[in-house]
Image (cartoon, rainbow, N blue to C red; front, side, top):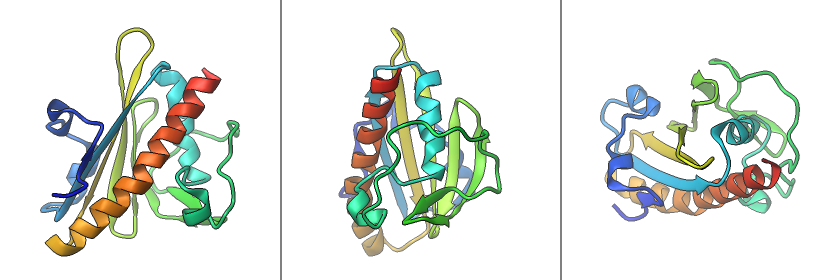
Length: 165
């Protein structure tokens, strides 16, 4: 499908992601990934900051408000809590979390897992998988739109984690 893959290997696409357990027959499956030159312990706090802001194109999905560029002290995320925020509004909910390893949430019918895979030499693979039940034509549009926004989000999180590690 157009836009269903960016920055991930074939083997990363074959991994089992926590979001897979929430959608039986997804019409949309999209994988994104980026290598971060920082250990997973330095990347994880930025993943938890998704509860505060979207970290993609703030002028589009955060009503022009800049996503925080410094870490904000907050407790570890827990299932049932709000997943993210946009324009000051809390959205979605966290459905699964393993601190330091993965955060899975749902918003607007989509389920997404952010997974940290430590590599050698203090590098971490930050992987994102999005699944959703939808028809094929809607899936194409959603996949392309998500690719644009998720790519920016992952690159922003990468930059912040590398700068602060």
